[in-house]
Length: 193
Ligand SMILES: [Fe+2]
Image: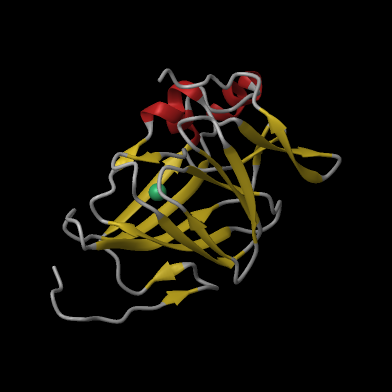
């Protein structure tokens, strides 16, 4: 673990980090119950495509430290619904995150435990500030190219994937008439409070 200041670079064309410790590859099979079109999900499962990848620099999971890395969401759809990340709240709910879009086009779908929601578009040079308490999911709306983002968040934040797996996101991003459209998720369930 480097305790001295260090520099690294993101290669945009190659979609790589010059320094990283962890490479996470998420396939469709990790997204059970997340896609609206269950028939299309089943059909695509035989190919089990890679939906997204994360390269991260490990830091101690301590207050004051920052995790950082890149997320790459590949282009594609399951039925009408674009490839996307699992989406999560932070275990430590009161922690924020910053995303910097380097390549591609997408949307960040977000919501609070109370069910307030927001969707922000992402294009190269977009910087998105996700405030504390907002769950977030990256969606690649470009049918031809990867969505590449740099992220940074408090290293003690942790990930709560389970709440989204059970309740879903309030909004889905679907391709309709060749364009991304934000629609209500008929299967969304309000969290008990
Ligand atoms: Fe996060």
